[in-house]
Length: 221
Figure 1: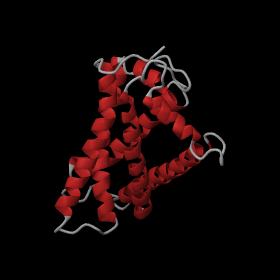
Figure 2: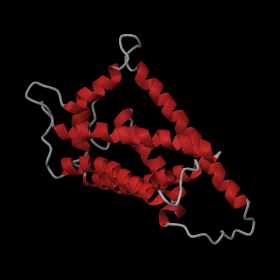
Figure 3: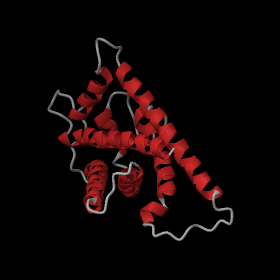
Figure 4: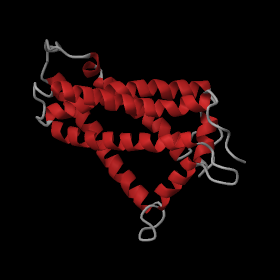
């Protein structure tokens, strides 16, 4: 079960890294006059990927289905492991083990991220909730308008802090679960996990901050 959680965690981590790179397309601006924003072109590429062999958005939805499956397995596995750990200590006293703050709060940060992901998908993917004006296909414009709102910027940046702690410990835990950790390379693995988590979290946070401080131009009419 721990291996299943680790493997799905790696898949989800790779997706998060790729998603961060894709989000940075927003920093290329609104596009030239009469043109299309790089972020909108990227979104269109994802929708049309696999064509004309597969229908529009076919490959995208296939990947989303795989992502949802991995997510469900990961969340269910983590939940079951937490219950097993608690059941193994009927007196309710945790074992005396040296653990970091990130390690002790993995369940908390994980479920906070789960709630945030649901909100994020409902806002930008399905356009179900509209705290700001949203239009289908207008990804750059939707992003621009959303991140003019202080509370949304604070929410997204704060959650990237949560992502940092969760991702950093998750990457390190995977190495332990798979049995790849060794004293002579653990320091390197820890640095790698920290650098990756910093880069991903900072990359995500940079987008709302850039829009909020006025570094990014308004959407073209």
